[in-house]
Amino acid sequence: MSQKTNQKINYLIVPIVLVVATIVAIILGVCGYDWVYYLIGVFTGLLNHGLMLKMSRRIIRMAELYPDSAQAYAKKQAWLGVVIRLVVFMGIFLAIFFKEVYGKPEKMWVLVIAFGGYVTIKVVLVIVYLIFRKKVSD
Image 1 (tube, rainbow, N blue to C red):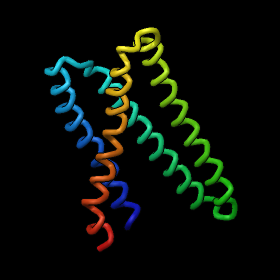
Image 2 (image 1 turned 60 degrees about the vertical axis):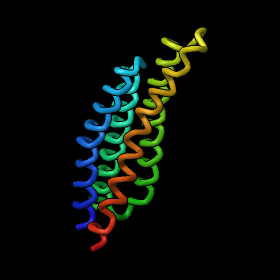
Image 3 (image 1 turned 180 degrees about the horizontal axis):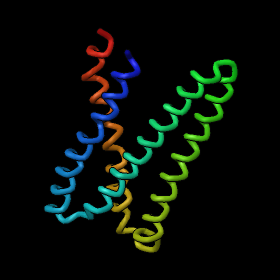
Image 4 (image 1 turned 90 degrees about the horizontal axis):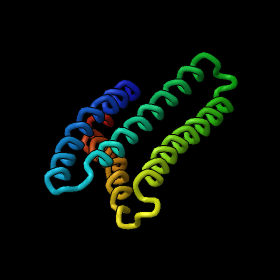
């Protein structure tokens, strides 16, 4: 039961993040900032969130199929998931750095805006979990 509710919450996060990202991107565009990099950060966060969900579902499925080796498999898959998500994050942000910021320190705000987009999904995730915490536990 808790697994299904948790999954519904994770599916609810994506549209909320997209609405928040649209509003923030419009505000950034009106203010004259690089809103595209904000969206790159948001979609990087959504990609990493999706990878995390996929890896956790894989761990749960394999734990049900092979309960005797579940602990070792879970540790291996958890670390693999962390490494993959870190590589995705570092790859995208290094690409932004070398494309826009390298040699132009005044463009450092591009990285800050992109990181703000990446953090948007984390903030929405925490808020949604806090809102639905009582409904999940009841």
